[in-house]
Amino acid sequence: MSRLLRLTTALFSTTMLLPWGAHAEEFPADWHAATLRGTLQFEMASRHTGARYVIQVGLPHAPAPVGGYPVLWMLDGNASYPLTSFVRPHADDTRQGSRREAPRTSRPAGVIVAIASANDSPFDVDGRARDYTPVPDAATGDRLSPRFGGAAAFRQFLVEELRPRIAQQFPLNSLANTLFGFSYGGLFTVDTLLTDSRHFQRYWAASPSLWFSDALLARRLASSAQINAGAGTKVVLTVGEDEQYPATPVPAARQEHLNQRAIVDHVRRAGAALAAANPDASVTTVVARDHDHFDMLMHGTRRVVEFAFAS
Image (cartoon, rainbow, N blue to C red; front, side):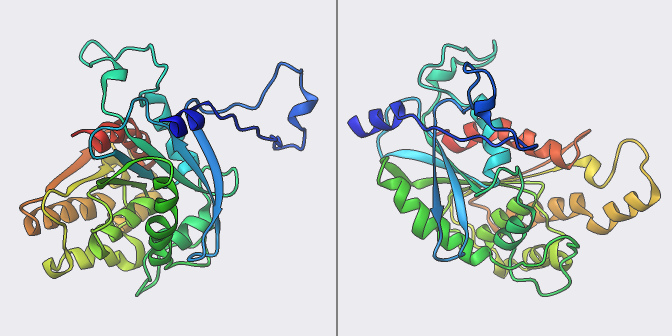
């Protein structure tokens, strides 16, 4: 308990460099770098990927339950975690839920671990293409990034390097790990479920890029032999309907691009394949009307804490 108290009360300072080159110290003395409440962070280099990452840790608002804290592991941490941090409970939270919800501080407690590249960008375009994608077996369909196929190494970083470090500070429940990813992060989430489902028990793939490499994972999902979710596994696949079937007309070139990626169709088929092959697992597929691609990041971060920490 004293270790948790020390973590909770520790303060971290940040030198903020503004985009146009001005430094924070050039502003009035009472202006300070903004920080997220109830959050600590550190940097960590991985021997598996060769890259360096910023790790943000959302501290639990209550003592650990019997068996240890559940953990929510969030990819694209610079973009996903600030949204989640707003809706999660905090130790000093006086806010109540809506009329339909219990007070926030009465909700189950857990640890949030958000992983981002060691820069200030919400999305490290090249880094996530490298870390979140499986080895392609066809043209990737990505015209922006030069490297792909590092998902296996990044997964080793998560479970062999980062997880033990977090476990040094908190009692963790080894059977209550949730993986959350969006877009390429969602692709990594599905790949982890298909490749090695031992390390996570719950998966939230928000708008997963199942079009990658001529729909590589969608093709794997078509074979039940490639699906190995354990009993009790919970999976949520989400996609915005506007990602393939926009409610309002779009330029012909844009519609052709959406048709080629066919993300809504891929997600629907993936959910059906997972549910059929895993009758003891819980598989939920959500196609959100009037939502586009980035809407699904906000849709997921709003809901994944309850999904991850519920009994």
